[in-house]
Amino acid sequence: MKRFDLAGKRVWVAGHKGMAGSALVRRLAREDCEIVTVAHEHLDLRQQADVHAWMTAQRIDAVFMAAARVGGILANSKRPAEFLYDNLMMASNVIEASRLSGVKKLLFLGSSCIYPRLAPQPMREEMLLTGALEPTNEWYAIAKIAGIKMCEAYRRQYECDFVSVMPTNLFGLGDRYDAQDGHVVAALIMKIHAAKVANRPTVEIWGSGTPRREFLYSEDLADACVFVMQNYSGELFLNVGTGHDITILELAETIARIAGWQGTFVFDPSKPDGMPRKVMDVSRLTALGWTAPTEFEAGMREAYRWYVEKIAREGADGA
View 1 (cartoon, rainbow, N blue to C red):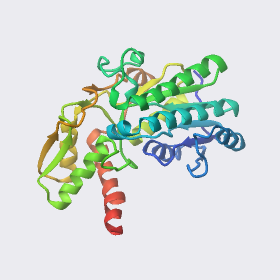
View 2: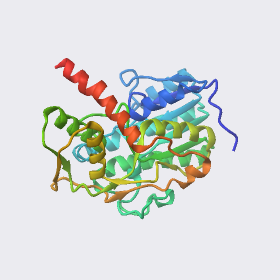
View 3: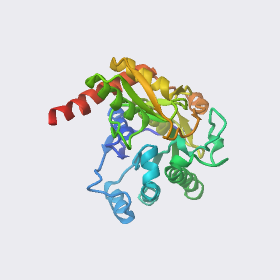
């Protein structure tokens, strides 16, 4: 495959304010390209005509489609229509407008929740659509599956060089810190830091603490996306992760160690666990020449440092 050179290209990062998108902006700064961004208040990606007009005027060469409505188990269960409609519309509009405006290459970011709830572990790319989805995030998953399939369909019918990657659970700089709607890493960082500051002896973990999850540092995801954009052109999406998993309790213990909190974890069995295990087979991406460079605890230290400096401290200063 001929390498797709980003040098001199106008590269749009859709969703540049999110954790994945902001990491992509930082990573692309090392490439000789022109980074294009637009805020939601200036372009609503759910509006088809607006997206097409904007992309045509901007003369975009390459797109990283990182924009999405995201949230944890509780957010998905409370607002299923929003998670389905918003993500379907954003993906459809950006992919179609990319075709119509002559974008040379597009990379779509999916999510590991696309896999069946009881998929054999580790999960290979071929396992997509081989079983029922996890009910706690099926609305988001369906929209992401549609985006992947759109990239496949556009490649087949229009010969568009559109590819997809499937990141595992992310953590890092710019995560969304919401105690109710945030992902598990952000929620645990908030809880454990608050317990440390208040000298509380216990922290509650939703569910049993036994589900196993794989976690990827946001800066590593961005590096993988740039690598795939430059070096891969194929219909099959690629898993992006580390290939290693830990329990939710082990995750909490790692954060507690980094934060310097010594207390006890208690469990709330009334809250759902979600899939019992999620770890991805990353052999295809490894064979292409990319592996995650950041050690898990080192990445978590950076995530915790960012939270303390940017969220917790600013919140305290503004109180």
